[in-house]
Amino acid sequence: MGTTYRLHNSIMYQLTLTARLQERRLEDGLRQLGLTRLTWCILLAVHIENHSQPSEIAQFIGTDRTATSRALRQMEAKGWLARRTGEGDRRTTRVALTPAGIALLERAVPVAEDNARHFLSKLPGDGCDALQRLLSDLRSGEAHNLPHF
Image 1 (cartoon, helix red, strand yellow):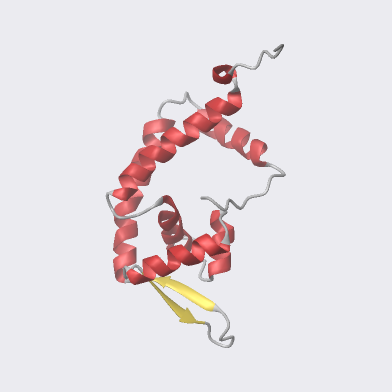
Image 2 (cartoon, one colour; image 1 turned 180 degrees about the vertical axis):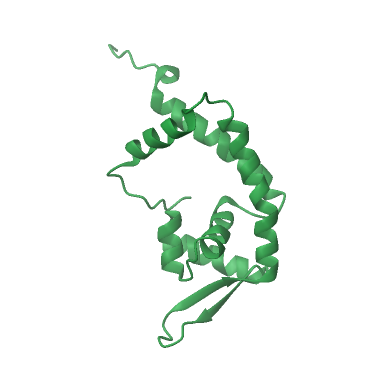
């Protein structure tokens, strides 16, 4: 078998491994608050980024509408958000965080910030900016929605 492909020498394997490590650390912290990565992203999309329609939220996060709708139902059942019919067009749904959802978001932000600091502090000087540019370059031209966020 004449291939010289070496798994641990592959930059794409290293990228995947790094993403999974930071993902796991973030998820461990969020789990202590009852959140998943998806529900965390929904809290941010709704309250910080002002997205109020499920399709906008899904597009902003980069996941599919079905997964987003399922998460929204679960979050509503937990009292973190409220969904209401749109004014003027009763076919639309609007989403807003409840006071409990806002309080949860405020408790989760430090978890995410700590996770980012943990990993990014390992980079030299302008490493964060350089990494941001490189990752953006790698995603360029690719589909942005992930059915399994």
